[in-house]
Image 1 (cartoon, rainbow, N blue to C red):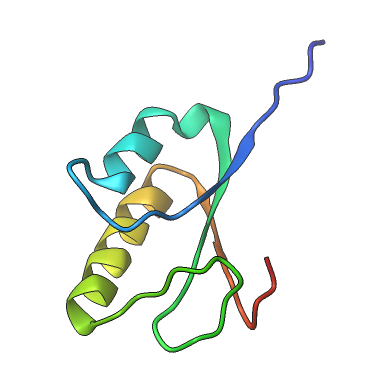
Image 2: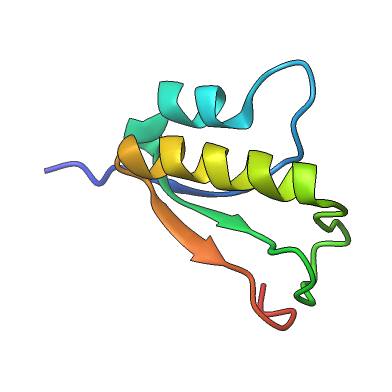
Length: 79
């Protein structure tokens, strides 16, 4: 039986495309999405700057989780 590789993908702040749409399209190949939380130190060099971005993150995470992809919160620079 062949081994199927699955990826761990870091959340990206929204741009032209919704991140959750991209993850949902490739959900069979993605094991987890790791993400920062507003006000929590993380080692990615990005942060959730304001409440609007936090609400967007939360909405996107709900879609990603509904697609069957696990979520991994970056906590205290643990990436």
